[in-house]
Image (tube, rainbow, N blue to C red; front, side):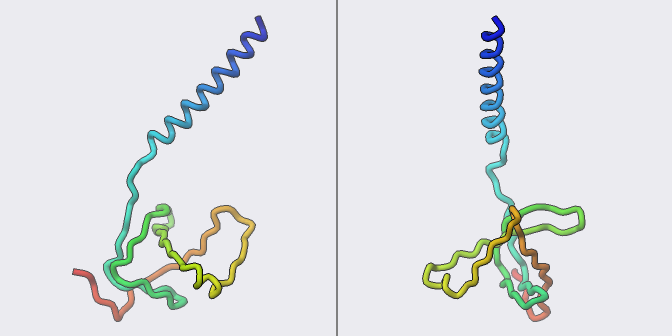
Length: 108
């Protein structure tokens, strides 16, 4: 009898786990929030982001800023122009704060 209760408990735990994973995936939003820059932006170290560049939202922070993602695709032949490093930290980010470039024009 104890073995039967043990087996039922394991099966019940398995099905609850599977249902939880399916429920979590079902409740996730299928949409992505996209922000488009209305003017040319520049960072403190000179990175220029042209007007009209689209970003996806990484997160909203209580400090008063929004973290945006920019995906950059590099052709294989261009990869030799980069230095590759590894950080022993998961989800490592290199944040840059950008400001409106005084020389930029706004989008219509």
